[in-house]
Image (cartoon, rainbow, N blue to C red):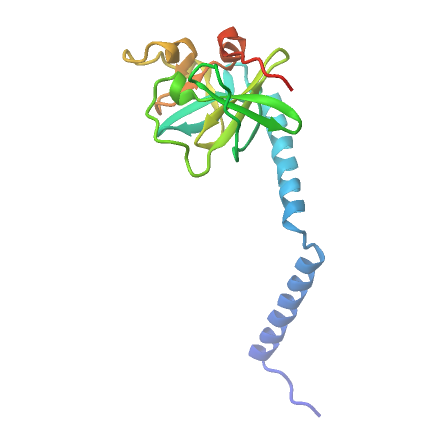
Length: 202
């Protein structure tokens, strides 16, 4: 007749069975990274839509990004997508702020270098630069950025005017500056400026 198990042994067996059950459960719901990424992306989209529907009128949802060690943001309603910039084709006889063109899923999109347009320090392309594509029904182009920092809501009434030394082209596209010194760009004004339109043949 086997000896009765003491309390410590019973607890040890119980923990082993629970651990085995948890392992099988996790294995049963295992998912390849691509499917996890797709599911997380869909959840993020759903949450963003829900938050946007509930957002008060005085709030603006912006995508924040870094450029030449400065912090920028732009209304997310103007952002079509963000993707790594692997390569581009320079365009001759275009303004200096036109970096070139890229092929985005069969569409030819011009790329603007805000560092040149805004007269920011230029140290060459970052090791991993990104393309922020702005779009409205009439216009589409990409902006060269260093990296995406995230999406956040800001209160319109909290936006301040630009500093006194902010002038020239950058001031023309300024929506306001946050208390954290994040320069919020006016996406509608950028997309509506005919000077930024680059005619490319597809």
